[in-house]
Length: 133
Image (cartoon, rainbow, N blue to C red):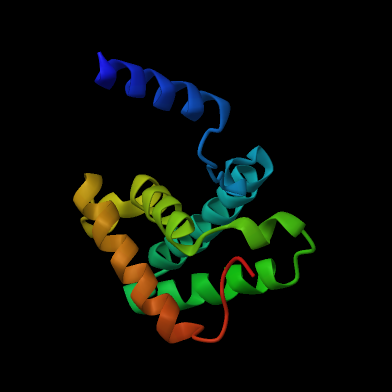
């Protein structure tokens, strides 16, 4: 009976004074829309470069630099809320869906491979910049 009483008191206290939770601002639809525009832009540039005969490395560096320049000069205040990992996931998914078949990338394995490749080349190409800031 004593356990039940203490359990009930603990339950009432936790209802009256709940633990604080933190929410991320990236759930904002305008951030998702900006992230979609960036990934679509990157995918178009990368796939077009591959179709024009660029190597994977040349196409990647070119698409990163061109997309970075567009983002750098953007005045959209939402760009500061974009996380690099989320953007890399979305870019990888977009590229694999748009033109991954042309260089042998399919499904989740293709997306994972392209993401790690993208992040590796991105760090080498723009070590002092961040896509979203």
